[in-house]
Image 1: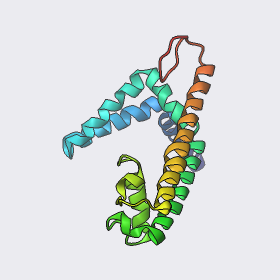
Image 2: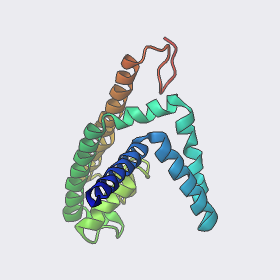
Image 3: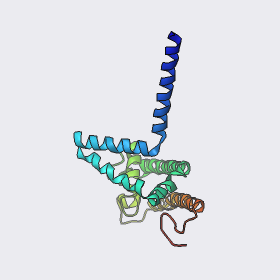
Amino acid sequence: MKSKDQMRVISWTVRVFRTISSLLSDFHVLYYMLYGASAVIGVAITPLFFSLHLLDVLVRYPTLQNVLKSIYQPRKSLLLTFLLLQIFNYIFSLFGFYVLSAEYQGYCENTWMCFLTAIDKSFKVDGGLGGFLETHEDIDILRFAFDNLYQLIIMIVLINIVSGTIERGNRSLNENDRSDHRYIWVIER
């Protein structure tokens, strides 16, 4: 008798875990649980969590889902390209630390600060990192090479690789779908 009760408890426990697993593997169940949790946290803690409800457009419009899929599908290529971008950024930061640290306007006290400054100022300042560094009246061939190589390698080549990878992901989504429009640009065929 005792072993039958134990078997029922084990069977019931297994069913409960399978049900929970099934529920948590469903996107819509997870989505609405997070949706409700953000509403409760928005009321209880801070209204900033209500801004998460704006992401509801991603669930309601499949076109936007495909835009995200075009970034998510090639995630390994994008992450490796981002790693390569940071490696080049670090190489330029080391060069900047050892050769051009005076031109970093006090933002290059150690290699870590040079690296963070290069990441921070690369896309914020016109001309990339070279637009942030101090300029001089005379032309320095070393600084000229630094600025232009940084611009060419990081700002042009690697960013275009990222754009091409996303475009390739979008193109593969369009090949799988036989509808009459593209997802990101919505160009009629």
